[in-house]
Length: 357
Ligand SMILES: *Cc1c(COP(=O)(O)O)cnc(C)c1O
Image (cartoon, rainbow, N blue to C red; front, side, top):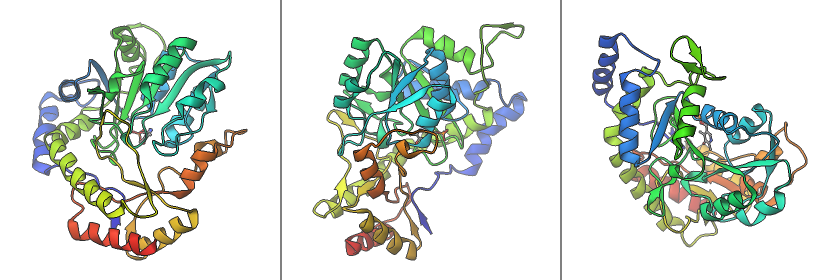
């Protein structure tokens, strides 16, 4: 069976050697040695100023909304994983959807200003499939209207934009280290910030608001990453470059195979160094998508409809019809892409897709 992705599992003895440190210290959570070590490695590898590792990639989005004191309307994208929208609603705010660009698949920055009202407090946008939003324009709009900016950068491990980690943009950027993501800790995630003040706020918020053992700085929640999660991250880290290189070769072969077909491919934003995190194809019609899906499934190959449905169709939001996002969501398929997808498997996928066109 070939699925859309496959978790990279490091050699078990290497994972266990790291775990042994936790056994020796008798310390398995509450920001022990391993979480701190992972944060050091992340800062170094990603070249970012502030990072806090967390237990998944959703809580950092929710904490960002809380820590930035947001209320009312948050402008967001309908083309993302459900966590982007659900976090807004969960925090008692109202998602205001702005449609996406048909090729970059990120929020259409030219439509943001028209959606701003007196209740708008922030923009929460996703760098879809690791492809950055139009950060410069979003930054300018946010400044002009005094809005906060949060980037759901769950797909962006290792991505740079204009020579700088994409996590360095916005008030807060978040990432997911879920087992299906490029870099993973089983379950896990992180938040990144330029502001030291915001880093401190986040630090308290993600640990119940604790200020030492007997005082509380403010309200908090438990979003701490455990030592067991961090151990997985530390065991995966030495392989990250080779994982990305392998993916690059697979993406190159897909691009070559599909460049002159009726499929549309992801258009990367200029000045981006990408991470080869997903391989979306956009079919000419939903009917075609279903044909391709059926043919692949019949051959025990399971791509995923990332992202479907468009989030403006969620049962707990109403009043939107984001035409571009719905059209893309109906026609997009992410093809298998992972470190040990071998050449013959990929050739078979390509042949089946091309044949179905
Ligand atoms: C995976 C993902 C999340 C959620 O991350 P978890 O670690 O699973 O909580 C949020 N946003 C996007 C765009 C994602 O792909």
